[in-house]
Image 1 (spheres, protein in one colour):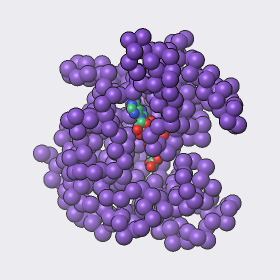
Image 2 (tube, rainbow, N blue to C red; image 1 turned 45 degrees about the vertical axis):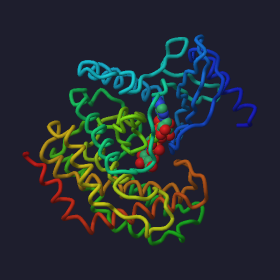
Image 3 (cartoon, helix red, strand yellow; image 1 turned 180 degrees about the vertical axis):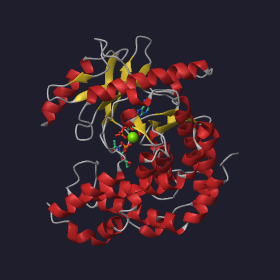
Length: 373
Ligand code: ADP
Ligand code: GN1
Ligand code: MG
């Protein structure tokens, strides 16, 4: 799309909404890997600036955006009711979908792109790494609470917005296919990483087998529980609002726990090229476990708690598999800002998996302390 076309598209989308006044600025915003996110500033009649988030839903990731929006509307309405019932402030503690002038949950541009908007949650900060253990604990309470607030929501009524999203067995198969195709001739650069993943084929079935055997239940899960998918209160430092609800669907609670550990229980960026800086922090694992279970605890079964370390390892392994697949396929899924970024991301995940394996007994001993407490 040319710049002129892009500008026209944006104008068409902006016109569909009442942002509370005349739109003054539209700025790319945030560091998400998937959607195109903009911050809108509009001048209100009282002279103050009102802000909103406008996003184009990624067409690569999400094939059925209408169903995705139906999930988000229903889940945020449920969250809003629950938060109100508990005496909280739903305008800050959950996202809510901003309707178009026609009352729709999204607007489609002439190229078929689907856009939606949310009120900007003011007075919040979005962190890219767990700068302090307190911050990481706060995110654990937020995702634990998310799990608890949705415990009575009928999971089967949610659409699967990305089929087989955390189907690690299938993710490995996709990697094998990408290696076989090797469409860009990149496989020779990443032999060690490919071997690392293939050597863990049996692991890829650990949680799925437990699900098939009825040991782990299907729940309403977020499925993308990175620290940067929760907004922190600027004043109190407490986690306020869980965002990025595109992948809310039936899933495993251990994966929500695990993806947070993957991203946050270390002190390096996801794409850190210097692997000597990439280490699992067992203390942060413990911190997050305590925080997550303090909110989600009684909503989870003993088996779910026992499987939490598997959630951490599998989410990290799976994410590495996905980064590597995308690297081999030409970086078509995850946003990249430099060459080799998806390979660096793959390598950090391999290093973290190796660390988890090294500390496996310790991780299991930590979660064991929360069983029947
Ligand atoms: P992606 O799927 O691409 O990660 P997100 O929905 O997570 O997209 O949004 C990207 C970034 O935009 C977030 O990390 C956050 O910084 C910011 N953001 C999203 N929604 C809001 C909101 N309602 N209020 C304030 N910031 C937001
Ligand atoms: C993507 O959208 P974002 O940046 O929060 C991805 C997650 C990955 C993550 C890796 C819909 O998350 O699954 O774990 O990147 N989201 C989707 O950083 O694929
Ligand atoms: Mg995000």
